[in-house]
Image 1 (cartoon, rainbow, N blue to C red):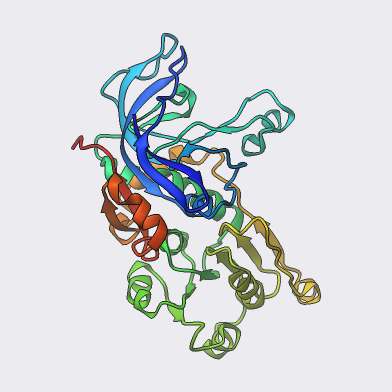
Image 2 (cartoon, rainbow, N blue to C red):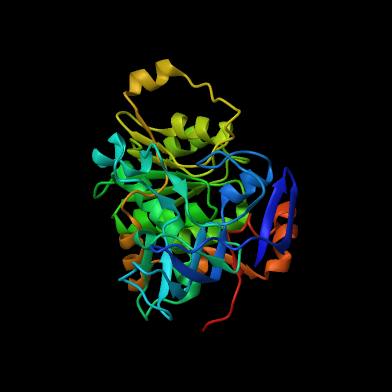
Length: 339
């Protein structure tokens, strides 16, 4: 089958790859769309994502598609069904799974290599999508489901103030979710001035360009008072430091952005201590896929504001190198036409 295959650091190509095996519990899905995730960019740089990197491997895990074949034991799907897939499989039998912490499964594995003609995940990872939801928008299910996990950890309460650091695809989703959570103030910190208008259109109440203004001083000058919640959506040492600096007393800070696994981030423990911060990290998407599908189908998420471009498989490697479109938002690889 055709796939975008990662073979090494800065080495990827569109070529032929062995089709994934079908077993009795598998669902063969023809891929319609696959998003380029920050994890794919990390892997292109030779870094690990949520799991150790094993080469060669097709990139991609944010997919939508159509069922082409089902295994002998599959009862919930049939050919022609429109679906999306949770890429994270858990065994259900280890201690972490039995404690309900399936995202920490001791035997977990990825079951979606989505920049390819076909994937064959187990049926428990496959989700039907309603007719009202396009395959294009359904490809946002996985990143949205991860955002929902982050929002659950952030625990925004009615009328609170929230700072969102970074206004990429994830930041654009988080702004919308914080607006729906009825945050009174949604302050976006983003160095790309051209994203200011989008931030306000999606629900932000304030915008700070850290290249022009010190975020701590700027927030103090706004007269908002205490910053209750902070969502960090970038994963760089500088943005993590900013997130901790702007957090108010007894604030919750969620470090959502994917960091370089080889780097550490020093922080002022005394400042965190005196503010009694709650610092949390958000890992993948336990039990949030169905909610993400429901939100997308409801139309409350402005997907056009999240998706920056649709590209052909032949353009993926150039985009991995340049990141021109990825810097603006979510890039979808249109793999096969169904609609």
